[in-house]
Length: 291
Image (cartoon, rainbow, N blue to C red; front, top):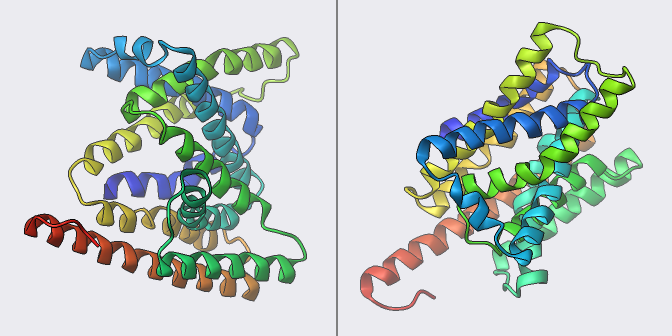
């Protein structure tokens, strides 16, 4: 789990090496090579047939396509944020995501918020409003990253397919679009991939996308959900440190206040999750329903 979060958290260093290539071109390559990587994994596991089963009905295909478009949007926004020097906003987006997911659960799935969750969401809202006022513009990249990932999660919640098979299905549906875009760029002589180093890096984007997901999938079945939730903050924390200490992006007092409020909100949210997880385990041991 830690390995997966570290790979995600340090991934801005990789995409910074590709900042001279348009994000749409990088995204197309990432989609294609992710499909190649995941397809090879499923072939080795003898599970490649599960892709056909996952896309066997119109509803399943529609859900997969919707999820694919959501995660593709998220990937594009993340690559763009690194390319244009907005990695700080990207890290803020992934900090905000758990709280946006809580709101989505309430709005779309009828989930009830605990008092701690309501406080956390209120603090996050205050942080975004404060940053908007101070910078005279909303942190669009942060909000779009958090929302697109929450939308992705909402679609994934409606399918029981495992993560590797579902993501393989998603990039399979997106690959024709990616190939078409690269063909268009090639015909227009507009491709920016010109060196062997560029090709090598883009090929590596497949394993870089797939490996942490496989690690995460393996670990999430073996550790408690409270642990999963807490370790998830390692990803945006590393992104934040890379943005401020390596990329030397500006970090204003307004950013400091906003991030401070988000960190307090996540502390409240996480402590509540740990408390409820412990209560559920105590109730399970006692043979009684959890409060």
